[in-house]
Amino acid sequence: MTEVLFYHLQNMSVENVLPSLLEKSLERGWRAVVQSTSQERADALDAHLWTYRDDSFLPHATWRAGDAEDQPVVLAIAEGNPNRANVIFLIDNAPLPADAHSYERMVLLFNGDDAEALAAARGAWTDCKSRGFEVTYWQTDEHGRWQRRQ
Image (cartoon, rainbow, N blue to C red; front, side):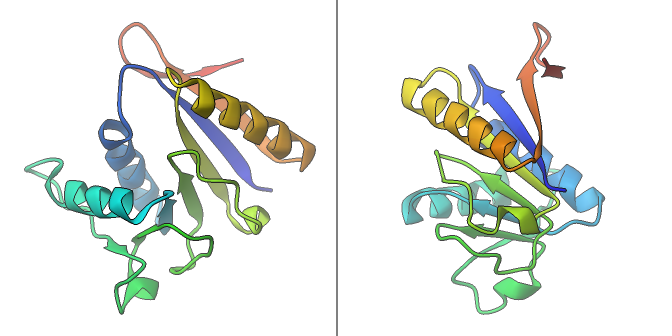
């Protein structure tokens, strides 16, 4: 069964949160696809993932790479699973993929300070529940640690 994690971002950006989540996915031996909604956003994330920390290397490529199917992380703007990923990260209000059931995990990162993003996340939550997916909601506590909320 597909597990769906909703990450409610407040006072933080996708750029701050995504790299560590991708690292954790790779530590599990998973492949990941990150689906955004624009080429400009994917290109900006591509540049960011090379430089987000001096002591880390996060192997990845965009969907345009000739060897995207061999990459552990692929940044994409269209639906699909170019690298046979176990987990998909949906950012910038990217819609749930038609093949959502084929992933072990879906992670929706949404801006809790944006009414449109909040509404889209609520809709996705309802959709995921109706499909029988196991859904969890995550928010940071006063110390900035992720906590599962009820």
